[in-house]
Length: 89
Image (tube, rainbow, N blue to C red; front, top):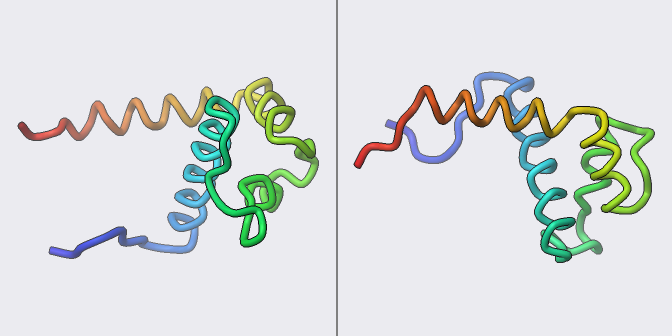
């Protein structure tokens, strides 16, 4: 048994990074707080590696991604994952 997160390949690692950054951006916009220090990193700079034309502010970038259907796909993926692996009580 391994502890922590184990990635099979670079694609898994990349998908995990995108998923975390998208959830962080949603949290930042809805709660009006920063997830990480802007001096070290930013959610938008991470997401711009995958979407170079992303708008400059957190709120406008979030709205752009919602309108593009990115969060719909993310939420569907997370819902399927939870359906397959129920939490043991």
